[in-house]
Amino acid sequence: MRRCPWIKCDPAGATSRAVAIKSVPPGPPLSLVSWSQNYAPLGSVGLSALVAVLPVLVLLGLLAFGHVRAQLAALAGLLTAGAIAIGVYHMPASLALAAAGYGAAFGLFPIGWIVLNAMFIYRLSVETGQFAVLQQQVAGVSRDRRIQALLIAFGFGAFVEGASGFGAPVAISGALLIGLGFKPLEAAKLSLIGNTAPVAYGALGTPLITLAKITGLDLGALSSMVGRQLPLFSLIIPFWLVAAQSGWKGLRGVWPACLVTGLSFGVTQAVVSNLHGPWLVDILAALISMGSLVGFMRIWQPAEIQSADGLAPTAPGAVSPEAAAATTPAGPAWRAWVPWGLLSVFVFLWGLAPVKNRLNACFNPVFPVPGLHLAVEKVPPVVRAPEKEKAEFAGNLLSATGTALLLAGGVAGLCLGVRPGRLLALYGRTLWHLRVALLTISLMLALGFTTRYSGTDTTLGLAMAGTGWYFPFFSPLIGWLGVALTGSDTSSNVLFGNLQRVSAEQLGLSPVLLTASNSSGGVMGKMIDAQSLVVATVATGGRPDSPDAGTVLRAVFWHSVALALLVGVLVLAQAYSWPGLIPGGVPQP
Image (tube, rainbow, N blue to C red; front, top):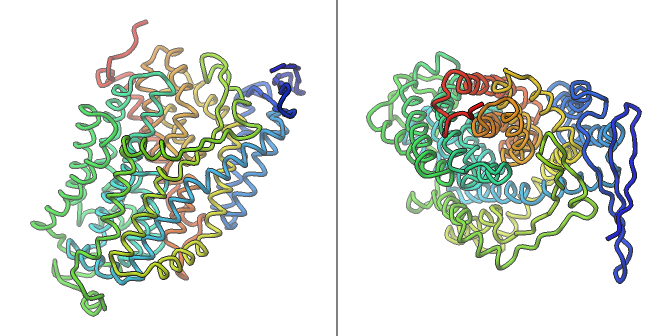
């Protein structure tokens, strides 16, 4: 390789470096532009942050206040991000286009692949009539919709998050709640709020495993630290969920169930994360939490049953006339659980390292993104030394979570007596129904990847990192921002993990505390990231009263902000008042 560097200065005096790389014979000439990120293109981080935040404001503003369709809002945000990356950050246009293309492809696979196949399973359950049976069985635990929300949005959603993550919990929980008679907006809101506390340990601990790899910190210490932060919120979230659903009056009627649900989940989360590690935290906590709630319902029921149609003083355990009159398919009741049981089994198996490694050994092509892989250089203070950013698209079709969902749906259909031709027709209708949603997800991820590779995300994080003594409060807010922008706690940890460690060391604080806080705070951004909003909208769509993404955003935005601020308060207290809670203590000056 022969490199010919040159220096290009912007009007503000900041510099960005571009390098043209040309291959030598015998291959054909190939030009690749290399570029170093500049986090203060306008001369200061603060001023640059005011510009860097514009794509987010455009996207969320159009969704929340402009009532613009999600795909058009995403396109507007993407165009804004591209213009800022090229015009302000002086990112070469070819790199900006490559980053957007990379994000669009990632939006379709693996994210869109998960959503498509999760919705296929739901539609299969509905079309075979088994969902009506499932509805009656869940109502048998309690006909109270607050209890059902705890069981599905919090408990079962956490189980799916622990096994797969990446949008599947919101899609499946939302669809289940709709089938149980919840209104679409309510189902979307509850699914998003419930899918918070488990996210840091999602997909068998992937966010923390990635964080440890990125920062070089001990995985056990990070798992323990998050396990000393999130259990408090695991206790709070069930109360918060019901209060958001039914108000304080509704919460008073079922607070014992909220306590049992949150306490059992939080205690299990704390114990497993500290004594075992991040891999099985959500799965075990969810199973114990759901089991505890179901067992508690055998000895206790709320005095007033709040049905899907409103508060009705009905005798506990009574069956509604609608449920009694429902027409259900013949056969044993356990058949209703076949799709969801197979989903759980397949997703769990696909998440195991031996299974995943074996499938990847069979087929796991990795494609460097042309013109982008190793072409963008991250620089201090985000990293200790300049570091090339990878951009590789994994075609791991066999080991993808969406493939596990597809196989679960296919096997479930055959077990329920659905002929292959009918299954294919149902899958085709599901794909057609989701065509706009998949396009929207693709545009959302294109926006996120553009801001990531251009460095605008990092500018916003650096602006918060410059808060000095108060940085522990803002540390989880950086994680929250990362998840809100990228749609993934894992991606947020990749984006800001090293920034958190470097900032902690400069301030004499514990790197374990602040890097773990990036993940803990990030979980609260999960309910407002564009990807989750679209997934929730899709999962609860198909009815005249179905909400759009902007309506869902308005319903959950302040819940997300309030919970993120509470995480900031907790981390501030742990940094200065309760340092004994930090694994390994704090660094000595």
